[in-house]
Every structure is written in structure tokens, then in C-alpha cells.
Image (cartoon, rainbow, N blue to C red; front, side, top):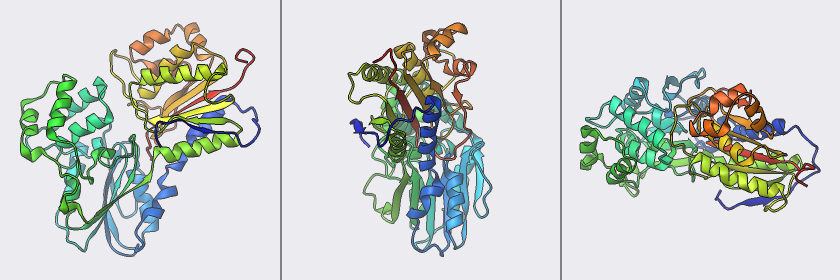
Length: 440
């Protein structure tokens, strides 16, 4: 799906639903659409009776492996790594948990074990690799001469400075012994089938989990430039490695990757389309802004807030009652010492733009169930949020500057808490606009 707005009309009369209930239902539909149990089986090879080695990493890796076990009749063995709290019992495939969004020693051990599993394969072997968002942190093996501590420090700095996901992954790939297509090289000459759930704008295989099984067009010099761009201190070992020709990743067209197949089985675009259909069935016009929206959370929110106000006043591209839907991955430049994630930050900035405008509600949440490092998927905004926050002693503008969304929405009891969803197609945002006497 592109950034160009997509308009759809209602399929039935509005039934005056509760706004919070409707927004939550739309999020639930988006998440359900990306569940491995719904999509994975259609992408498996025809011959499911042969032996296969299974590897994988990501927040959905365990649920993908569970689905594979149910549909694969032949022998299966292997290992997948998922985030703490995202695992479930498996019968034939081992699962371990590691840290996200910053890797830990379990991330390193998982990467070493997976490389060992694929180290002595031949052309008759089949490897099925299950990749989803979060895999970059969960599968972390530093390049030669680089310590895990140095890589953790670089990762934390990138997450705080406002770098885009493409920039973050470019650096990650070139500091890794397994990302950026290096895992695919390790599988050669076996047949490799990668099944991926995309959590990145544009659904680029080289970006999903930093592309461990995808040829990488980025370069080490670009990675070094990104670190300079954000003025991130570079340890001498990392600077030396990025100047070493061995730090380059396998590029598109590399003949060693010719026996590999990469299939995206779920994406944000599919989930947004499903949510749009649900909204239409409830009688709402829909405006799809795209599934690949990037930029600072607060800047995106202000643009969306201005659009919502225009629509509420009768001057927008679609008429109320309507729902504005969008996805992608925004960024947050950390300026304060507050707590929260990019979806909460988006909602705080949206609140400053709307200032309690009547008839406008919003939900912003990560489809994996975790916004940042908290226990919430996101939060819900209502016309009453601005005034309720004031009455409880909160200054939303000040909390926004302090990047402190989580405590505010927790106090207002407006957090959206789902627990791990075991899938991940990135952020989901919905703005609901209902006509009121004030806006007519």
C-alpha cells in the first residue's frame, strides 16, 4: 500500500457504536488478519512429507513454528528464538527467549546455535526460516572483534536519536555475523525457504529483522555515515570493522543465494484493508493514508490531527462518520526522561493538536502488543482526554516534551493492554470522527 489516500464508502447505515469499542475492534481485526494460523499454511511447499530444518527469529517466530508443526507431516527439527513472554509450547521445534529491543546474551547464544545448525548442509536439505519483526534484536551475533556490549550501546543510541528503521538496520547488518544475508550464506547449498511477516514500511525483505536471509544492497560506508549523522560515539573496534572489506554483506545477484526463496505471508497493508472493511460494515466512510508512514511520531500526529479537524468541519477528502487508518513505523527522538513508546507519543501530540475537539477519537498501538518497552500495546484518545488530564494535574504539552506518555495514559486508564499477540505488522492507527452538533 502506498502513502496515497484511499477512499471507501460505507456499506450500510451507521449503527451508533461505542467509539472505544469500535476502535478496539478495528485493532483486533488488524491483528487477527496477521496471525500465522490464518496465513502461513498457504505458503508452504507442496511436499510436506519431507524432512525440514526449521530456524527463525522474531516476535511471531514461535506462533509461526506452531502453525508449521500442525501442517507439516514430515520430520521437523530446529530452533526459533522469540521475545521474552512471546513463546508457547512446541512439539518438534525448540524455542528459546531473548531480549527486545536491545539484544542480550540469549540473543547471542541463539544466533550461534542457529548458525551451528545450518553449518553442514548439502543441496538435498531443506531449511525453512521463519522471520518476523523483532528478529534483529533477538538474533544478535556481533561481527569479529566487536563485543556484545559495544553493539548494545550502538543499538540503544540509535533507538533514542530518531534514526529511521532503515538506518538502524543498515548499521545492525554491518555489525553482525548473521544479519544482512549472512544467515542465507551459511545455509548454502541447501534449499532455503524464508516465510516472513513484515513489520516494516514497504515490506522490504532486507529490512525485516535486518534481513538475515536477504541479499543486502546497503554498504559499510553507509552504516558509518549513519553513525556520524546522529553523532553517535563510535568505539575503535567498530570503526575499524566498518572500514574492513570483510564487513560487507552479500549483495543482490550473488550466485550463492540462487537456491533461496523469500515469501512475505502477512503485512500491514493486508491488516489495514481488513480493518477498513470492518469499519465499512459498521457504516463508516474510510480514508486509508498508507501502511508505510514514517517520520517523527509527533510530526505525523500533528498532520493527522489537522486532517481530522478539517474533516470534522466538512472540509476534508471524506465525510463523517468516518475512520482514518494508517500504519508504518514512526520514530521518537528522546528529549526527556519519561517513559512510553512511539504510539503513546503520537497520541499525546494528537491531543495537543485536537485540544478536546468534539467527536474525534483515536487509537494508536503496535500490533505485537508492546509499545516501546512497556506492557501496553498503545492507548486510546477521546475528546475528554484533554480536560480529564488537566483535572488530574497533567499538562499534556509538557509530558510530550518529556516523552512521558505511559504514566499519563495509565492514570487516565486509557492504556490498551493486550499482552503479546504473537504476530507483528507494526503500528496501527485509527482516528474516528463522528458528527456532533458542535461540528455540524
